[in-house]
Length: 64
Image (tube, rainbow, N blue to C red; front, side, top):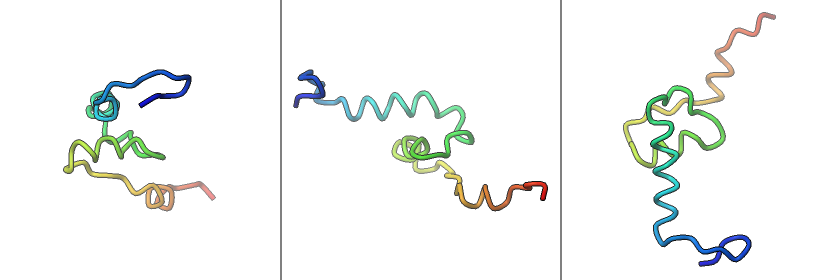
């Protein structure tokens, strides 16, 4: 498979990049909610407690 610019990726690139993200974030799961960060943790560890961002926002005190 060719990547952008004609480069080639290793056959296991997808697994390695997911694992790299997981390794970088597994020690701090409580800070990984967002567009996709907790997806990496959940893909490797089904026990991850994923935050529901809408509930986090709705339960914040906004000082109004």
